[in-house]
Figure 1: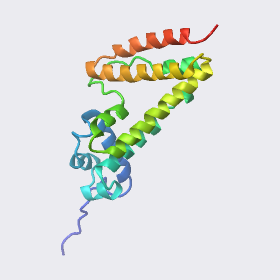
Figure 2: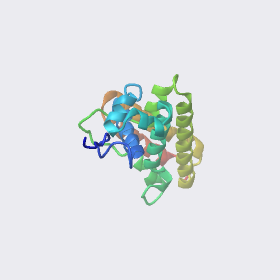
Figure 3: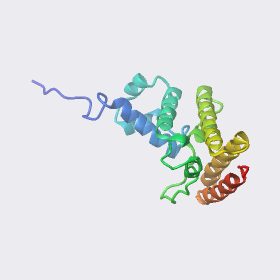
Figure 4: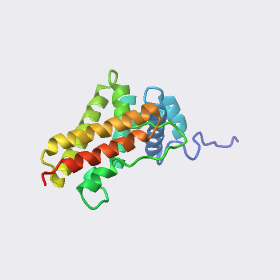
Length: 194
């Protein structure tokens, strides 16, 4: 009598498959890029079949959306940051990252917007909503800080954040964050009528 064999390895399919797929996609999309990462590679890294991947994520666009939702949950709302006041919470956005071993990759939402612009409009819509919510949170902190024009200041700070993320990625150099930090400090100093 032939011995029964298990066609799935212990990690394949089954429990945790969705989480493994999402974790693998998150790492690969962020490091390698969305367009450069195929579902075959994600399935292989997650130790699942493509059929299992498509069971949980019916399209690559659906997987990208879930990846961005996963990232959004991990990104702390600047209003909830562990700091004493609104100024300190805003400044936490501009901590200068330590240079790592790999390339700087910047904002995952910006990266997704650029890569998905023409081929995944639903992803572009998701990113737009995320960026609007982020700017609104910064504006609210500026209002709490007592800025005379919190809308203007909030948009300036959001622009500096986006610029630092993009420039540090393009140059693979964290120095852009240091320059942005100095500028934000100056804007905050000038923003209140004393």
